[in-house]
Length: 322
Image 1 (cartoon, rainbow, N blue to C red):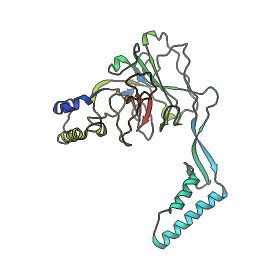
Image 2 (cartoon, helix red, strand yellow; image 1 turned 60 degrees about the vertical axis):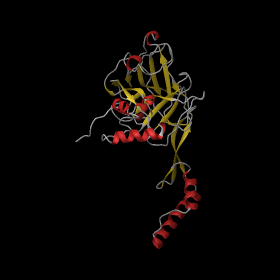
Image 3 (cartoon, rainbow, N blue to C red; image 1 turned 45 degrees about the horizontal axis):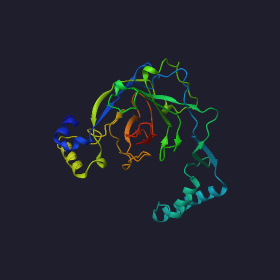
Image 4 (cartoon, helix red, strand yellow; image 1 turned 90 degrees about the vertical axis):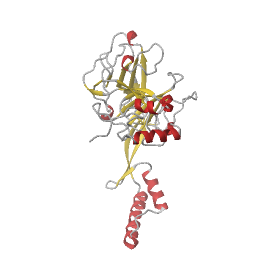
């Protein structure tokens, strides 16, 4: 038996002090299909001028490397294992000493160990050969399907592409690990004709290749999470939601899934506000989700969020994964 259905509109009516924090989000709701270049889509063919070069990623990609441990490293690791077995036999202790933990950390060097081959396995950045890896079209969104989303003047089409490989802190994205992302804003009426289709990248990670999906966009009110509300107001919000048998976060606030605009959730980390180089607090532009019909997997099966500057959408974006 399900609990009562409540809406953000009811919450705002009950607590008018929450109204200044409400944002309009467009829930994109991708579903498997065969979209055309003139439709909003995930993983569909983009509206792209024939004479415009297709973007390629030239930033270093993360690749797995295997390194044979030195004799000294192997002996140190085996010595730690022997010491732990002896302690376990004598007093049942399983905990590493601080010195042993430091030694193991130095040997692993940010990776893991293959104790059969006695090799260290690490992800390291490597230059991309040739002209780089072709970017993959991930999202195409027409203004008619997300009218509340802020865009540069004279544009009505937003396109998101990414490199289907992992990168560690790519240029302009500190504390970020994932695919390099590019945004294109266009005036669809001036795009002219369309290209035959994007080039197929070789060596792409399958989890970064979206299955073609049509969108079923619907607008909804989105509300922020605890850290972005005054403490007393959040307490009132929680009490109101609990009294109606529901949870505020991810039900009435920080709506999950693919969306344009709205509020970001910080459900895996502490609240991490992102500021533009101009000093303005950045706002959530897009949320791309793992799973579902697109079949993507970002981070640990999480959400990739794109933030933009509310003062000038031409300022560099910021990326974050939860």
